[in-house]
Length: 386
Image (cartoon, rainbow, N blue to C red; front, top):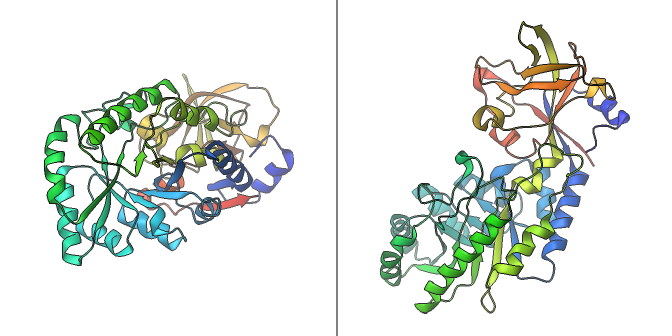
């Protein structure tokens, strides 16, 4: 969505703030870019529903033919309720409960992406009780540094995710005895908001090593799930509204050694939906200080927690002063009773006043889905443009 369009700003002013604003045409174009990049390949893309579970968003994604990657039982339920086939649902997560596993078994989902040897035993036992065979993929920890924020790095041995390389002998020993499991593939995910594509080359090399170890033991894998993690440009959402999916997938075309008749699965989330969404807010007060000025908004960390949680950057625009030169620096903050409720410090904005409309960009991923009722805040509505 190009917020520089004057007529669009007029439409936004009509709505009560704060609210999430989604450009569904941009989402469609992003999905088309993904599908073009994987056309005529063995690549299959799952959408990581944890990024955004908005109904309109999910409907667009379903219509474009993507599968779903889930990390909770309720995400599996949401995907099925939204019309996704269980055969296209992968269920990861380090702490699956028995109820969640049983639900997945009943729905006969594509795979449980198993993150520990202990979990293997539990799924096998629950499947045995139901007289079912559970499709599984083994999540392996490749010990690859994603070069991203340490809170969203998932592929190092110090992280809680996946089975480590030194556990493989035990894994190979136990798998033949777990007769209610059907090993379909192996799974990797090294982190999120990755902009250095050489990281994915390193991942490919580690996946190739793991594949060799499985093949040497006569284990043929139907698929390899290499995860997601492709980053977006938070600084320039207009100029880089669609990530470079061609370059991302080309890394795997060049460096991943795919076995005959094997599929390669991806689980993209942020790169699919981040740029199509913005958080729209109004200025409640301007508070002038000695060292800084505060622009106090009616949106807060309850609507977008990433800046408070990760100190992440989001581009902030004053939609009411478009075309005006930057005149002042502001700490752009919310109304929540926490000092961390801050969207950005020393942000250059045109001189800003009470009632001005503010857009916090690239909020389509991990915005609405991570919102909370803290301070008994009402959930912000969502509006759409096509």
